[in-house]
Image 1 (cartoon, helix red, strand yellow):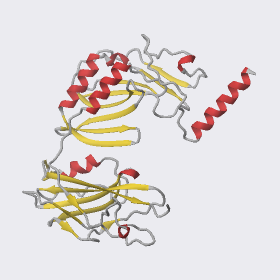
Image 2 (tube, helix red, strand yellow):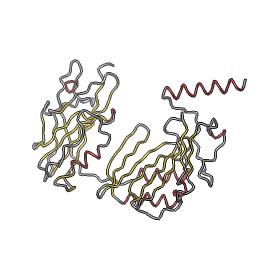
Image 3 (spheres, one colour):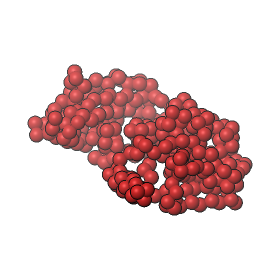
Image 4 (cartoon, helix red, strand yellow):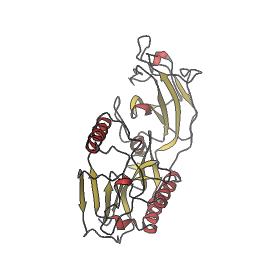
Length: 335
């Protein structure tokens, strides 16, 4: 009887994993690392005991990092409430590019270099370098249940620790990382107010801006406040509901208004069901940027990468004077 229960439970687990379902019954407890760097857990804690874990322990990995100058970091962790977070930071030329994924929310932006020192302060306070050298991968465990700590330093030193089945951080460590994440300063530009006659009172973009059967596949009318010192403007439309697919790109605009159908690079909404967001971005620029950024009609995961290109003219940063975002939605053509 006991063997049958185990077999049935295993089959249910496999079915859920293959169907992409989350496993709400899987424990998400903080797990201590023993002196060898291996998580200490029992079957009651949800430890996988079927031998499907691939473990790599590197005792020679240094537990003390001399450098304090972080080049990049990727950290996946739980806070004390069991909420799962992932952030990555990469040092750029004078700034830090930050990517945050929380639940279904994705953000990417530039932050000042000081955030790297703040992160190093947390690493030092909780002696996170002591986790260096342990990795474990358990097959069949869906994403969002483990932890990762990957920190690379300008000196070439690194901290690498990973386990996709156990949180790896204490509640105190997780909360410290969460507070760092939520209070991280951002590099922001003055705001531009944007208006559109093609954004209806209910927040929907006009049907004529869609590729629906009754649509016209034309870009929306837009106007915005003038920005002192700007010689031109760049306009984009992204769909954050679909991984920032670029629906519109118009560069070199010298006026503060564009009529309906202005953009040559435009692909109207074409989804069937549900309601999705479609965000218009307007950038005021000192001069023409060195490159035409982004991939029209394709996924653009990092809007901050596009902004870095827009902000670069003549090889120098500082080209963006102001930025505005106008959010609209569009219900699909099948209700």
